[in-house]
Image (cartoon, rainbow, N blue to C red; front, top):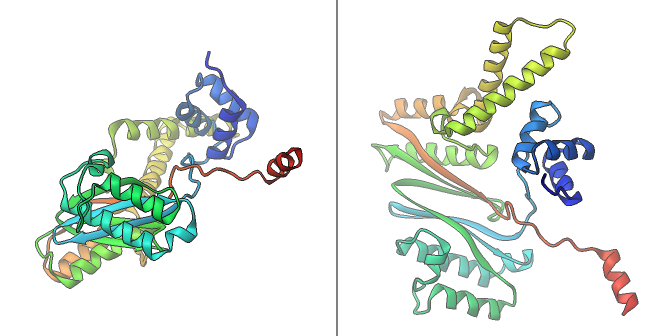
Length: 308
């Protein structure tokens, strides 16, 4: 049996909003597997949705940049909001983005060995020098490169960034590019996870189907007027449609006109411009997503000072 700590229980509570004892029982049943425990809580109707763990903000910025048919979205972190707004930090972000665009690299470790754009130092040396100059720890956390017809968007001073890839035969058409920008705004605002139903991994789809089936069955067992099996199947189908509207970009209601879906909006622009437009891919970064910042314990700090 897994050793389940109070911290494990507290983290699951933060993720799901469920009670401590419910979280503990779910972790015991899941033998300590947190993802499985979330699923158990959802199946029991105790957690309405599985929140993403660790969404504690860290400072820095997300930069989305396109040059020709190449684009990049990169997250670079620093210790303070003050640092993130300085010209020196923003210059560093531009240099790193340009360096990624200029090199065929797949990850941060490979990037560190590249020579910076417009300079002679390696990225690792450049970062070390800037850390010493600026006086804060900084790191290149992640990036994604794309090629094709790309539309970048950044929001709230780099707190959020999105890069959208279009498949279109009119990549220089202003209305088509405006469509791409509106799609990028949609992704940024509503945080779609997939382009369409077809892009949801089979195991993820099966898990959601299982969760909704178990939840509907439980609700039916507790109901004073149980429904027949065929009606339960229809309820599950309806909930899966709702799930698709939440996580699939093309199924989401268009934020500027909720009488149509994003798929219908894109089709309307394509028809008006005599173009072929498809949303091929997108990447959305949120600054600090999944990073835990050190929590300041003022009381402990005062106590330590008193003892000193």
